[in-house]
Structure formats: C-alpha cells, structure tokens
Image (cartoon, rainbow, N blue to C red; front, side, top):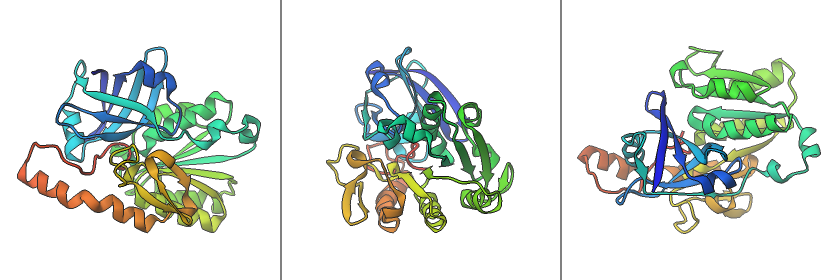
Amino acid sequence: MYKIVEKKDLAPNIFSMDILAPRVANSAQPGQFVIVIADEEGERVPLTICDYDKERGTVNIVVQAMGCSTKKMAKFEEGDYFKDFVGPLGRPSEYVNEDIEEVKKKKVLFVAGGVGAAPVFPQVRWFHEHDIDVDVIVGAKTKDLIILKDKIEEVAGNLYIATDDGSYGFNGMVTGLIEDLVVNQGKKYDVVISIGPMIMMKFVCLLTKKLGIKTIVSLNPIMVDGTGMCGACRVSVGNETKFACVDGPEFDGHLVDFDEALKRQAQYKVEETELAARGEKKTCTCQHGGVHNG
C-alpha cells in the first residue's frame, strides 16, 4: 500500500499527488513513468513521473480526471492509500546517459501541451541542475488550464506561454509560437523535446521537420498495460515496430507514424463512453487521462 501524503488541485479536473514510495523515488530519472493501481478493482494506469524527492521518499504524479480510472483516483485524499505504485518504468531521457559536455553544446527547446507540463518539469530541472539553460513553451487551451508555471519558471532559461484563446501569453497554438521564435525572432535550437496530446506532438513534428530541428516526443498517451505484455502501445518508428512502454516512451518524432498512433489511442473511446453513460463501477480498460493523455 502506498500513502498519499499530499494532494493539490492545479486546474479544473487536474490534480497532483505526492505518493510515499521511497524505492521508486530513489531510482527515478527524467522521462520515466509509474504504474498505479488505485484499489482491488482498479486497472493498471501508467502515469509519467512529474517530480521525485529522494530525501522524503516521495514521487509526484499529475492526473487529469477524464476517464473512469482517473475519476476514481480523484476521489482519493491525503492519508488514503493506493494498492500499487510500481516503477520507475521505461527508459530515461537519452540525454541522461550522454556525455554532459556534449549536452551542454546543444540548445534545447521543450514544448509542453496541457498536462504535458508535468513530465517536462523534471527534465527541465535536470538541465538546470547541470547548469544548462533551456527554453520552454507551455501551451493550453486557456489561462485556467496552465499548470506548474511557477515551478518551471524557476528552472527554465526562458519560459513562453501560449493559449489557444489568447487569454494569456502568445495568442495561438504552440506551433505558432515555435515558428515565431525561430523564424521571426531568430532563435536557434538543436533539439526540440515535445510532450503533450498526440495531435499536438504530430503537428510540432511536422513543423520542426520543415525547420530542420531534431525532435523527441514522448508516447505515453498510447500506453495501457505499461509492461509490453498487452501490445496496445505498438507504434511504428521508421521501419520498425516499437512498444512505447519498454522501448520508450521517448522516440525520434520525425520517424513516428502519428496517424497509426492516433488510431491506436482512440481504440477504447467507445467503451469508455458506454461505461460513463451506464454509470457502471466495474473496472474498465480505457483512456486513463493522466499526464500521458493530454
């Protein structure tokens, strides 16, 4: 059993939790995720690690309550316990194992969409801890849905905000802001790391390919089981079939078949809608709505 030691509301239907899980906290690295099972009837929910504190022994997750499992998780409060909290899983971000002097030579731009700001934060903090400034774009539909702004601002070289409705920061989507920074302001980037809704990552990659900027994406949105056993997270990367949970979750975005991945992501939407309409309480295999489902 894993105790919820802190819970905070970040935005409408978006909340964060600190979970007491010392072994996970001690081993976690940027880019990895955990599997959460809420109770005896709960399904396996893969959630990206937002933060971790080795001294406290806690791991922070950010969840958007949009599917049956995450709506159940939203009802848990401080002092309650999750049945299982397994991790860290997946491969850490590639720069973690690169020569740090080579990493310092690169100018990196992070692009986060919606709750994608959560997994972006530990990565940006890693760069900050290694005295490397990176630029960050955080995009959301409206000002009220922007999360973790203050935390990211503390560790980013430059933070840019984009809202679809223009209620805060740049008026438009993240792709418009990327183009503005590169084309109009003359910013130079060697790598873009994009995390957020699948459709956002697709269009970021279409743009960065045109601009000639290497781009890494995180394919957490298509995970279900999280161990490679169910096969739901199969994705075509170049000429190879990969499993997002064990081979990733990060891949070269210019090689990902996003159209195939988007179809795979939608495979449980009908079941989720039917369960919601019937108000059933049984376990479902459906969209989870954590930070991997922007």
